[in-house]
Image (cartoon, rainbow, N blue to C red):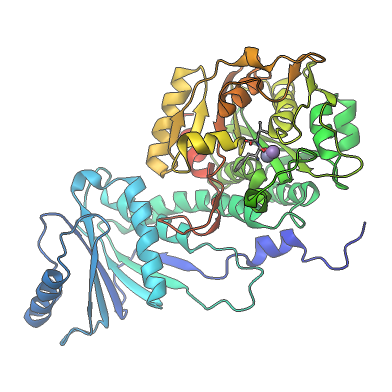
Length: 502
Ligand code: BES
Ligand code: MN
Ligand code: ZN
């Protein structure tokens, strides 16, 4: 089938999704029209750089706003009488024990949005002398990181986009250290932006084929990318992945992106890549179907993480294995009740074609183990509505029998504001089928856990973690460092985990 016109998603996505820009200078104030000063609880209002009259005005404005310097609180003084600034925004930081990476990124995001709303183009930001749980350089860098993450938006389909670019000039305690700290975070941002753009792109443009093309782009950073099509998948026995792909003209793809920055056994990151989940013949009803372009967010997250690691030139060995398919209805699509054969050797009765994520993951996990002998395998998937009902979208759900990995990932999640909450495994026995080795939905039991228990059959003896990111992938409201659209959820979590503990 040929398309009458194509927006050429990948090119459009990668070149122009980011229409604004924030840029950061850590070399001191520039004499901009807007000044942001930060203040911890118990600290006095800023005074040094202001005349007595401006100080008096600030004091009055703070009182009028009932400003208490709690974290995220702000007040503004417009057109102070004898100052060159048009706007002074005072931002509360809260207590010093609240000054950590996660809170700073969130604050940076929220303040950036305020400044954009004010159409501030150049902003001076005074961060000098502030210390908390992390040092001044890290605090300022995390603030910038949050601002830049919030800045990113997916606007390729909009005719008019006003320019909301902001240029920041920070005064910090140590220029060089701050610049260095931010540079490291900027590599992670690039991975997040890739994951977000891939997720935000509409389903008819972001097909398994287009996703594979986007992965190929990482070759320029030294990532080895392999793509297997339906015929190769069949030949290797990956009948579950191939089967789910059959309902769409594009067919399934297995996409492998390997960044080998060390000779250690790799960490395998396995991603669910359903470019659209209609449910198949067990078709979805209700409005949630309109968000199902984001059902490839797991694949996007693991690909984004590989990009982040490659740009960081990290001395780690990381391979992303992504099972890509569009779960569509057609005369070629699998029918409920069909039996698919996985490469692992287990046959699966597809009782419900909407439980397709575990099918593509089972073969992707097999491939990761078979071809890479990973030390650890982490799969990331928008896997179940049950997960959303259990823990909502402020957490993802983590499943593993490996206490060490659970605690490492839980800690990493807190640092980057991508928190995970543990749910149990343990329902492997509820997946028995009359006709095959397994069936793809539970006969009772909690849905998120039966899905995880299904995957457990394909983890073998590899140290394994499953992260269900259903509900985390697509934001309908901007908040903190996350803008509307694809969130890139998981890139920061996995990057933090890999860089800090591997
Ligand atoms: N992609 C969905 C899960 C999902 C739901 C992601 C909501 C994001 C938001 C998945 O493929 C699915 O349809 N799961 C079913 C499984 C059921 C048929 C056993 C579900 O959770 O309803
Ligand atoms: Mn589904
Ligand atoms: Zn799905």
